[in-house]
Length: 273
Image 1 (cartoon, one colour):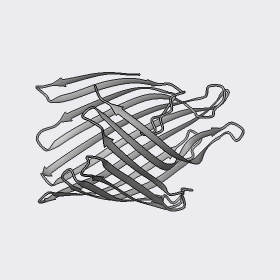
Image 2 (cartoon, one colour):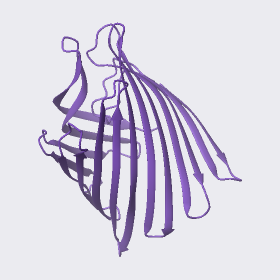
Image 3 (spheres, one colour):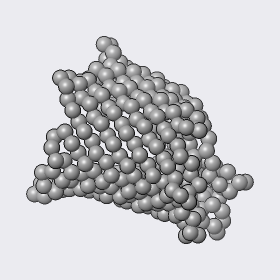
């Protein structure tokens, strides 16, 4: 269930929207982007141009989730804000910086709560170049992720990423990415690297073939392949297979969140009216 409100102030070019949504705990989201089931949330967004070259975007999310596998209807309450500034000095270059604070409260057992506060700072830029019908976009970003609890436990992680996207009109697209995580001096988090590749190709029959591959160091490899075929202007059918990892399964006997891997194959029918 989703309800939304949107408004545009023409004089200041301010765009604001608010969305409320509820997803049943029994909803199976496989094949639909892994929508978090058992959640209810309010999501507000603001988009404000500040002249011709500067733009501000803000967001605030208040969400409550049920923890998979938990007993006694244990829940996770989450508050997340986001502020981002984009500066575009010319047509090919965009600079951006952002700040994302997150507050999470998880019911681990009766009368016991696990609280954490996260802060994420990012700074980066995009360079876009066109050569005939081919568009290339290079993205470079660096960030600092800070997590701490009321008990004084703190983790600092540096996050760096580089991405290159190549697109040719409506025929094909490809993307290469690298993400590196480095823990601070007092952090227990080991340095990791994640390499990714994904692509999409449009066949003459109007069918679309896409795939993705993620290769993290020390973790299981993830992949996705998908085929979409438009039957007519309103209907499309598709097949999708994927393997991924999740870290939100709750084990009551261990009292902790743990990670598991899964495989999924799905068939979809989409109809627009």
